[in-house]
Every structure is written in C-alpha cells, then in structure tokens.
Image (cartoon, helix red, strand yellow):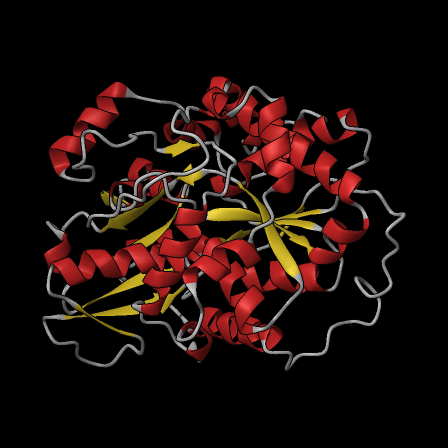
Length: 394
C-alpha cells in the first residue's frame, strides 16, 4: 500500500504561508497578551530534542525560579507549533534551527534563539535491505522538514555518494536520484515498514524505535557528520526579551538547569519522559528513550563496526546537552543552507551574511549568565571557552 504524503506537504505549505504572512493569525493571542502574565507556556513535539523543556517542567524548575508554568502543550507538526507561537498561545518553544533562520530572515518575525536545547540526537535510518547509503539511489527518503538540520546533513551524505536530490517524487527515479519527501516523524516508521520509503532522517527516539521494532537500522548518525551540532533550539518572542528580561532570564535559567541535571540523570530522564511516566510527555516506552539517553558501550562499538559512526575522536553521545549557542554553528548553518535544496522560495538566503545572522538571530545574554551561575561551560563538558571550530565531514 502506497503511503500518503499529501498531508505533510500541506503542512509545509501551511507553514510557508504563516511565515510569509499569507495566513491571518487570531487577533487574540500574542497581540493581546499582557507582559504581566508570567506563566510559561511551552509548545513542543514529542522528540528528545524537547527534553530539557519537559524536564524543567517535570522537576518544577520554573517554579523554583519563581514563575508558574502550564503543562507543556504537545503538537504533531512544526506548522502547528509555529502557528501557536505566533499567536501567543505558547511563549517558549523548541524549533528546528533552520526554521528559526527562515522565520527571522525570511519573514522578519520578531523572535530570537535564546539557547540550544541539545546537541546531536538524530540519525539516518534505512530499511534492513539497504546495505549502504549508495543503495538509496533511485529511492525515496523522508525528512521532517525542508528547513531542518536533517535535510542539510542528509544532502551532504548523498552528495558524497554522487547522488542527486530531487524534491518532487516521480514514477521512475534514475539510479543516481533520491527523492526527498517531507513527513511527520510519527509517520516515518510505518512508511518504512510499508516500504513506501527506503529510509528517513529524523530526531530521536524515532530511530531507536525503528531499531527496537526491527523495521530499520541506523546508517549514519548526524552528529558523525556535523560534530556536536544543534538540531532544535529554544525560540522566544523578541517582545519578551525586551519587555520582561527578568522573566526571560528565569525561563532560561530553568532550561539550563534541566540540561545540567539531565547530563547526570539519563535513566531518570527517560523515566520522566516515558509514556507511563507521571507527566506522560511522550508516547514512547522507557526502553526506547533509554536507548537514546543512556550511554551504551556495546551499542557504540556496533555503530562503529557498521559505519553509523566513523569519527572516533568526535563526541559519541547519541544525544548530549549543552545550552550555549555557538556563533560558529549559526554561521556554518547559514552557509550550508545556501547549498541545500529546499522546496519553495529561499531567495532570502542569497544575501544573508552568516556573521550578521549569528548576531541578529541569537541573543545569548541570558544563557551566558545562566551557564555561569550553573558552574560555567566545563559543567557541560565544554573546555575551550565561548568559541569553537565546526567539524563537518560527511
């Protein structure tokens, strides 16, 4: 049975419309929101990228900072998250880092990145009968969004194998063509099982779930192509940063403290996030989340043997937590996006200066202070200070 892809395409077009102002937002919401309202209202997708926001809520870290927090609101798609954020229904979200570039510079939406949510945490999963990346030629691969680190990294991997990306699937693909299709993460596993796609690249724990269900295997981890990359970042309204900086600082403090706690409480984090956990934040059972969050030397060895990881001197954590948004990453991301095939109008990227983008998109005042108060960068495994060199090699 052919898997239906039109729904997720409509989702992409919906978000495109939102980010170009073609869809009128409700008059209530952000426009009517009072800055006196101190409640933290989180919007998230059920992926491990959102974990620090959820752990901050579960461990009552917002309340410890003196601000109330509603139960985080789960969304199924990025367009839903963005629409709720633009309308002011939620005021703290995690977004794919390239989406924030698109929102800030493609649509001039007044919001900024205030922290990273995590590092790594994504992979390219393929069907069991796909022996290598080269075997993806002539097949379809799912991505969660055109503006995603997944699309950026996947295209680097495919180009290395001499494969060409096309954005519109056709009846017959040439052996050197790979058709990319946008698909909701929750739909990727079923599509792979039905053989409607040959693989998918997405955030955890969908890769881990496919492994445990024996419907797919990890061909490459994204962090082995771009070491310690961010995938999702914390995105907040410019108005909040300007008009209630104390509140913003407290929000970022809680998120940073959540990441610090998660670094040494991996198993507890999996339990809190699991479908049978107190908060029921995600639909995943604890074993799936543990496979992502808990280091496993035996699995690590297997991934090096299979080629899912090849850089032995890079960070091998399947997902790691470090909140500082390095400017070098944003600069490299903008450069990479210029060479990445996406659907729709990306003309804004042509004249976007990477150095300007890094300074204008990110406001690191709050996260710097929060990190310093939490023990400094070394507490998060960073020993080289506030600057780094990006390591990118497909």
